[in-house]
Image 1 (cartoon, rainbow, N blue to C red):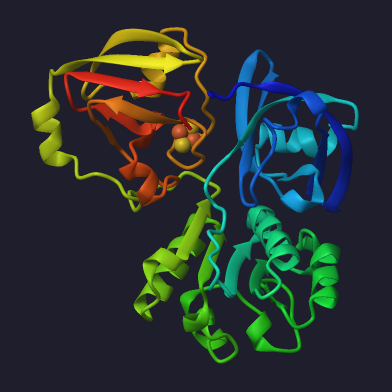
Image 2 (cartoon, protein in one colour; image 1 turned 30 degrees about the horizontal axis):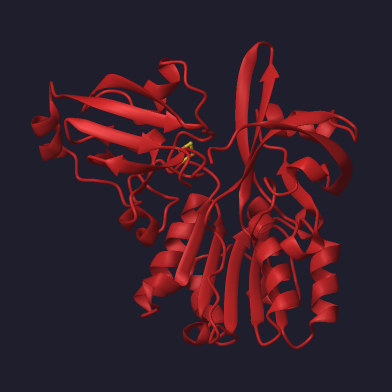
Length: 359
Ligand code: FES
């Protein structure tokens, strides 16, 4: 079924660092199944500020086995919602949330054993969910986390991570890297760069890893991913979650130059289905996205980033073809099944049918 916003009450707010809070939501019994989630997924929050609607996606930092839904929100410069959450939100307040979505979840098999995660700053939020769930439920698995921050004070979930370290002494390896704090070893100082990863190779057997999870700024993700590929790690083992929309076309973006000529002036009949109802409209091949066109028709379609990152706008193409400008969220097997990010999709056949109820 298509996802829609639901009002949820805030149960608890914890200050994690001077500029980051974690927010736990109260999930009423009637919404429990809608808000069931997998580790590594995210939710979208909608809120109006001075008459303008803001939508933001946040990764869930709790693990499914904990039976609670929490996110962490770090203040960013000029971040309207993040600053509001850090200074004004309080328990009892209500927020509009879209149910969990996203694919940044481990696909474990019987042979999955060793896992590595690299995170920087608030990139820890989906990672800690994945780590907790893995350590708790996959008793043969190990996890190594390389976590980059400015200094010890800016480490989100420091107590929880230390707690995991003591509890899973043999199975959880935490390597902090501080960019603005001196430590007793140069390994723990600086930034997480390919050079740093190369030095850490003396301590971590990257080739033994069954999964490598990356979460943080675009540069960290793409440079780490390139490094692992350069030393022969199978690309299918590398999973990443972007927090921002990349300024470069380095996702599975599509060659457009020759396409533009072929699509100029063409129009498709697009049918969008949501909640069992359908609406058809004409859409130019090189015009607005399927999502924007549907919204312009007055349809209540799910979205958040509009940049191909969060997957909130995911839908299935039942007929015809579309082309995505960028895809930083869907796995290859989902694309093969016909799923698309509608915020990035443009028609490429005269008739296109897109269904938001298939997710
Ligand atoms: S709205 Fe985020 S990927 Fe489309």
